[in-house]
Length: 238
Image (cartoon, rainbow, N blue to C red; front, side, top):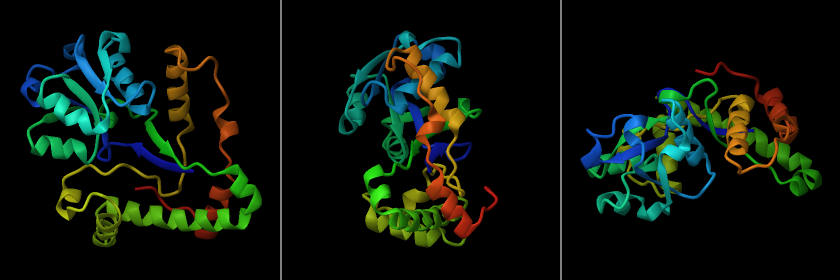
């Protein structure tokens, strides 16, 4: 089942440049040769950086990368140890408010067809084989939750309730910041962008992180999503 992706207006994954360079680094070409912090080789944010460089005719080899863990991303830019970093919300907004960095490009600014498929929901085969009814029930509950989130994402009547739940059960306690960040996109029907996953796989193969392609379609088991859609029906994705 789908989990999160980046779409226009709902793009939480991005490249951010440190604040003193925001007037200097305004494009991929201006980022050439600079040092960019990533969390580890070959995650989705590494792919995103590569696609950004390619959007202006460059490659990932035209930029330097450094593995920087999440807690050190902001200090790295504050001390000028790195020039830019791959960041996600709410850190991007918090860094902007603190004048540490500013967003250079969000994923949806240059990746829309296919979109950046940032994460998917994974099921344990041991669990689904042993407890298929539980897996079905979970799928229905999950999709109900997704639709509440989508309502809130679009500023619907459930927004205050969803924000309150997020503030209670996640580390993002400040309710006011939910109106300042770009929420990550979730598909109201739980669909996965197969084209988006194939785009990533092709890039990883090209970079040598994978030896050969595998079937994305074979990795997707629609039984539980289809069950949830049968119970809840499909809805128009806003």
